[in-house]
Length: 324
Image (cartoon, rainbow, N blue to C red; front, top):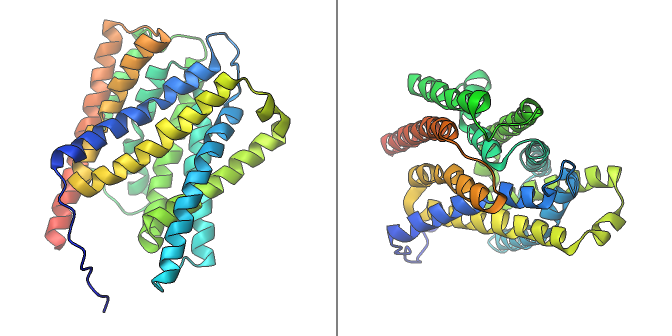
């Protein structure tokens, strides 16, 4: 029988957990802003999506490598089980799905969409989790879930048909790309969950990021040369670094800390701040339009996803209490 830790539990103020969750959500929402700034305001992006994604992964990977190395060494020291070859390979492949496929489709979609519309479409990925979970993982679709889905996609439809943030002849194509990203990320969450339980979240994340990085670099090298990265303008390299540090590394640690302090329900609900943060930054930094129709559609999307997220987190919380 494993020995109980003698370390006292950390006594954190709940306020700090809420602040970490809120700031983490805002930092994640800045991703689209950095990407749009890197693409520039012209018709043709200054940098292509795979190059920008390679910069993001290149700056992020060393941090996750160090974390993974420390976690691995800690397990060896404590004589705990290490991931098997099969688990290691599965985690890397799942990472390719979540951090390469979803991210690449998202970055491609941002070529054609405003930052606001991209964020709203991507924000609906929990509904794909619900539907895919029901189709392939034995989970159930609730009436609340279907009602929330209908509400959110009514908002998306209003913005597409009458709003200003979905303008452009390629908005449908861009929207489909981002929907593909939402689908990929939802599938990633479903298949990653049992692996995280088996090998631990820190080691899983590091292996998954490593697999995704290799896929991104292979894609980049198939289309470009390493020389391209060296000759990129400093502004683009800086934005790639900001994508990695501000919108990838920092929020991942913030949200993990928030989960520990206030739990998944509060983190999920505060995550609904991200579209609002993207909208504000898109208006003032990128100069994107925002009309009353956009406000109506956005409100419906946020209400639908917020309702679903809150109900789902509450249901899981109650189920956990029942088991204990």
